[in-house]
Image 1 (cartoon, helix red, strand yellow):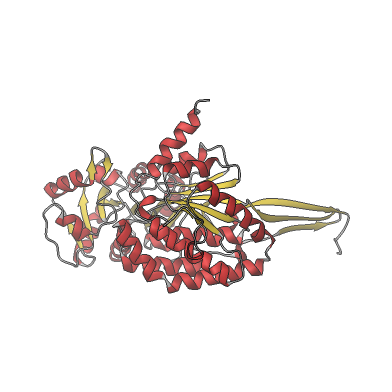
Image 2 (spheres, rainbow, N blue to C red):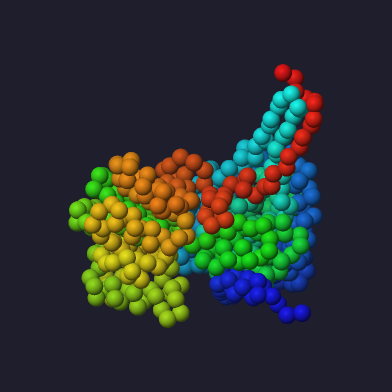
Length: 471
């Protein structure tokens, strides 16, 4: 029997996510993994079967037992934050070690655990009804190269809290980093008296292993974090899925904003981990009346380089090739990017800025590098219209600097994103300098928003008639 149209689509879009097969990490033999590599198998089918066996143990564990494992995962993440950060930058060639260390501490401290699993109850004359959160079983997770170990750890904490085990198919370009994180969470499980492994993967993640995972009957839920093809892969898989796809977050600045603070917040957010986070500021839409002032502060105090038209033309040809986004530029710092077009910049330069219309490719495309275009708007309605266009209907993230509550409300309704940050850097949305929990799987189109433990459970209603109401 030939493959269906859905299977063809899955193969195509997963191929975009799992695009590179350049891995040198492989087992020494075809035998089962040693204890130091618990949970890592040669074949995806074996990893899934092992995860199913482990899940039977996890499901019977008390919430306190799960929380003990999670507590150890948190401490091990903080202890190994620098090791994970350095390996990620070395393996992928993307990002900033110091910022990645901060992200690992953020994941360890602010990812919800079992406290997120709650019970709802109704009690009355007719009896008692409970709605509880139960596990899906084995969850299949696709993880990105941009935040590899952060996503593995964040997902494992939430999914384990819900009573699940996890089979990961990491991006091949971050396979070693992802496997180190998987080893770390499995060590925590063993040391806390849990199963030998709670997270599983294969030594060589590929397109084929991802397809096997997405179609396997033991996989109860698919959670995919990555590029624009991820959501389509999830929605076309025929399974219950959570899709965390692309974003191109615009930031609007109006005439009521604290312009000095806006310049600082925007550049801090845009340059965090060299713009790799999907929530990071990717374009500015600023009212014309305050644009010159904003640019002045970004150049004067925030380490921005105002590129000329000729330099922007060179950057465009460098960054956007005939095959699409130049992956060799993703996650690089501003000084490196400028050096690639023959501009020698000082170490203080953090971001490359320029002015143009919203259609300019370096503004309209999600780049994941510290290049930030500014689009002028004649009034606030014009700014909202341009920002909505730039967000491209991803409904992922957006930001605004304003002290006009009416303007903020109008923008929030029009942009309709899972995240909207007001008067702060974008990373406040993840709980870094802002309230709320942390998540590295932000599902906009499938509706979960910032995922947490409860996102990885299914509701179960238990009804007892005419009993257990003692009022």
